[in-house]
Length: 79
Image: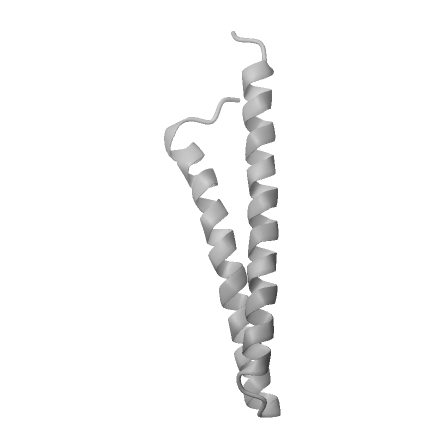
């Protein structure tokens, strides 16, 4: 089945969402750990970088899935 229009834009839009959500979750975890252990800003900084790494990892996986689906679409026989 061929992806068209709005559905294709939604799948591309999730790539950026995964990048941002990784950073947000990392910062929130770090912030609450800093509050609990009174170590501000160390856990926030550390988990910020973990969030960035997780976001890029998720983004890479999403791009790979998108590329594979596009290649399959191009190589599928036309009806």
